Image (cartoon, rainbow, N blue to C red; front, side, top):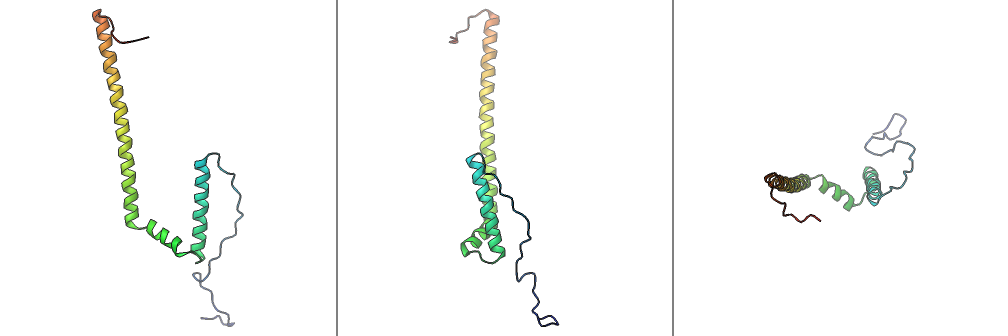
Length: 123
């Protein structure tokens, strides 16, 4: 398709024009984790730009296709639930230990009320 002047009409899907915005350089993170997260964000930005410009490798495209699949989403949800379960178990163990300490303190107090000596080893 051409314009009345004979020039081809560019469709929005034909080219990708990055909006011009000044990019500020971010200071490196203070911890390894924060620096790693910065690099990951930069890698995702680069991959997004390459996909939009249609210069991405097949491996890059495949990675994001797999990441967006229903199976990957279900696996992520499963891992999240397993993590929540482990946290709940950890909290239950801590709570159980606290209850045992309270029982031991209560028994010790009852013994002292009865006039019995405390047999625990307190140095």
